[in-house]
Amino acid sequence: MKKLLLFGLSFLSIAVSAQTTSKAVVSKKADALEKQIIAWRRDFHEHPELGNREVRTAGIIAAYLKSLGIEVQTGVATTGVVGILKGGKPGPVVALRADIDALPVTERVDIPFASKVKTQYNGQEVGVMHACGHDSHISILMGVANILSSMKADLRGTVKFIFQPAEEGVPLGEKGGAEEMVKQGVLENPKVDAIFGLHINSQTPVGKIVYRPGGTMAGVSDLQIIVKGRSAHGAYPWSSIDPVVVSAQIISSLQSVVSRNVNVTENPAVVTIGVIQGGTRFNIIPETVKMQGTLRYFTADDEKLVIGNVKRIATKTAEAYGATAEVLAPYSNHYPVTFNDVALTEKMLPTLQATAGRENVLLRPPVTGAEDFSFYQQKVPGIFFFLGGMPKDGNPITAPSHHTPDFYLDESGFTLGVKALCNLTLDYMAMGKGK
Image 1: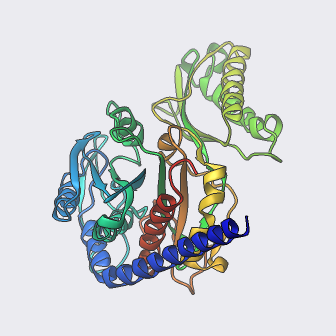
Image 2: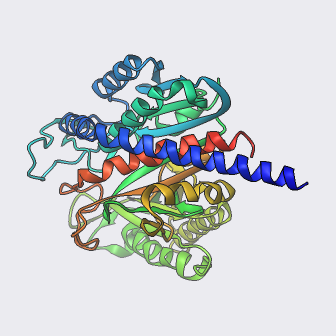
């Protein structure tokens, strides 16, 4: 028994030593790639493309993966690229994901590689900008592909590199994003056992990684409410059923969904109306008012509760005034909760801590933003974490946020993302499938 125990301890020591060695190798390779990663990022930043339009971006990714000897699939979910790297030893299949699309935002940042691109989006001319950091995600994952392909002979399993289009959504009438990639079989052939993804954050200092087990980003449904009344001259409101007044009452009443229906001590929720449209002239009461908004929640039960109460309040309030309300939720998009598998997060947390330093890996509160990485997590266990992209002397309160013209990233934090994704992959493989 003593000999068996000593053998087991010896084997564990060898395994730990091997993992420590692999992290040192990864760190050295990532540091050597830093200038290339930044150069890639700057090129993608200067040439951004909207969802389902990432033709140039996808072409660069595919060509680079092929140059590394990685099997490449293109045209997945319109413009997605998938690389498959088969290791020299048997083991699990790990997927790594980067989103590749930009946003309809006109850049204001004074940098040499600022975007000057303009295009048409939903019938309007818009600027195009990587205002959420997807350019850094692409470059980080290309760096990971470089490092892991150089370790192919010793790789204990297979890696799928998923470069996904249209995370920010697509124009009305189109399909795209993670949901479409899953439908087209990106998690099959070979079947993925676990998936890892990251998101740069402009309000988290470089060198930091933040994470949360369970619900980490909100599920989201967009919302449309069409209120129909009876039109009349503005001087004779008693002849109308005024949909503007009805809509005002609906908006006010919807605030009670979170404050009076959701148990906010367990999970947060959001009900926001962002658009209200009605009328053509100051002295005409319109027949119809249209509202659009967003709903956020962190559990399937709260999703049902929030949507159910929004529909009930809108329709019954309209009925009380003699009007009608048609409620569509979801209207055009729906993302599930981004849910980090609790057991997998617990198992892989030491890897993140060993990579960034225990003091630099921080537990964060849930985020009411949404991510379509959640569609992958519905099918396989996954972890989605955040990577610091704010200068160390920056202020999280005043640092420009994502999706704004002034969005800015400190590029010195990119290599930590490369190291984290590489080490998560190698350590998961070392643990073995199902362990």
